[in-house]
Image (cartoon, rainbow, N blue to C red):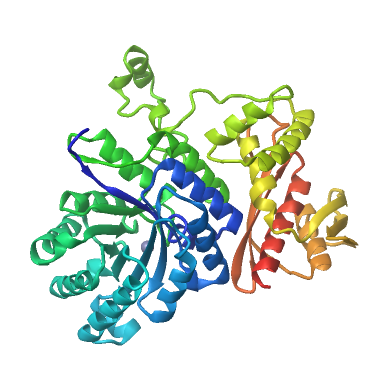
Length: 507
Ligand SMILES: [Zn+2]
């Protein structure tokens, strides 16, 4: 056992991360990510903001009652309704935590809350006490703490710790802090707040200036004991501190950062892939730790050095963060066990029933295509398990007739339950536009497409084409994804996927 100080990893992928534009997730997707976070070994899962919507409430409740091995946390503003609702969602948890927040900076006090400093303290204390009536494990966040006058921040922190907060989180809500400044704020709390030893200090840094990880490390160097972060650094605007970067900085530079985390680092890449698949937020190739190029050596001199001795140019081993040694190819003769194994490597945990339905689709794909790669498998799982959870409209058949320079003719048949509806039209600027119009005509839901992309999930021209799109309906953005070897078919399914999400969300 080393005597390095243990740093708690508080993951907020399901709460702050879900606030990334266009990244909203459905229940099945959230449960899949929660399982991956448990396997990764995070200490706290912030599962959502229960009062925000019925969907958020249900997700927190399901995660709270189904997962053990991490504290399950729900967010609440500092008022009775929010806190009561949070507890309602959390009460089935083995190890629940209520996270209460209230803004403290002058700019938020004056313009957002219109409250005096004394009123803020009163409201914060009342919130913590209310939460404390439900459970022992209470986190309090003074929102915009990094821009709060330090004297006032110390007063707030002392008061909430007195009221029973066991963790005090210092958020750099707008991503404005520098590492030196963040370090000083934490140092001031440690040295000036008389009861600071009764609570853990946490930090929650946003990445607007690309400093979130550096700010988080400066905070633990000055006494913080918890870092709030997300997989792939997703979150509001430029995102949060990236979990994989924080964890690998501590591990790789243990000479400088004498701390430990409980993270199973070999699960970093699979978890990153899962979050990227589920949210549709692709990871940039040169992203530290989990980017596709993070361990690719291009320069001849580097390659030569690597062949002679890996440590010449390699500070971490790819296998330590979960990059598989080979991009194993599956095919017609691969069995269920091989498929389950690849799914796990890709970040998914499939139940027996799920594995069976993915296996059936896998066999169908193997008939259409010789080699099946990781990207193909991830898409299959996404289609079978995650994407298709809103069971509303489904594609029965389509036919499209396109001639150069002419308006396309399309006929589409969709089903919903026992009902089947067809439409034929000659309209649109191309096959995809025509598909949108046909789907709209049948479902009555007119989506405005904001983003549309097709990419290949693997190699070769028989590769699976993955269509992902973002479309707007009544002011909200919905994602749609689908992957098949036929791009028009994939486009129609992706449109239906987004349409179904919109239907369910507007019920
Ligand atoms: Zn945040």
